[in-house]
Image (cartoon, rainbow, N blue to C red):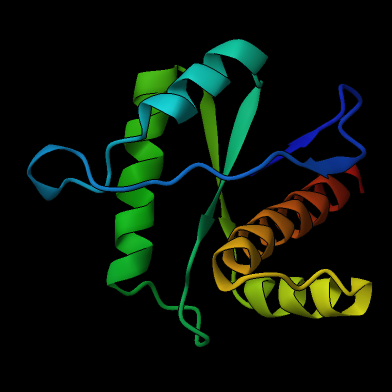
Amino acid sequence: MAVSDPTGTIASPRGTIERGRGSKGDCTRPPKDLLRLIEKIRPSRILVGIPLSMDGSAGEMAREARRFAATLGLMAGVEIVEWDERLTTIRAEREIQALGLKRSKRRQKGRSDEMAATLMLTDYLRSASG
């Protein structure tokens, strides 16, 4: 996850929350920890990465992400913005390598996800400002 400052100009990493699977294997239901965080920080909108295919089409993972986004918006009562997340993981891993931050596999995955979220939010903030 990542959050912006109140002016909407700087994106900062905010950790990770395991999505997991809800009851009966429902992975479109937002985790309680995420809903609690949203309630605490009260964002004006939430950016959700959509994993589109390289040709721009929406496969099953993108459809699942969109169902998750829709459910999150309803449950949190916050505007949802869908964002193309293609190549953000690759960009994140390159940034992490450049900074020399590699650690254990589990920690590396969390750090990679956190960096990818920060890069996505940065891209969104730049597009919204200009």
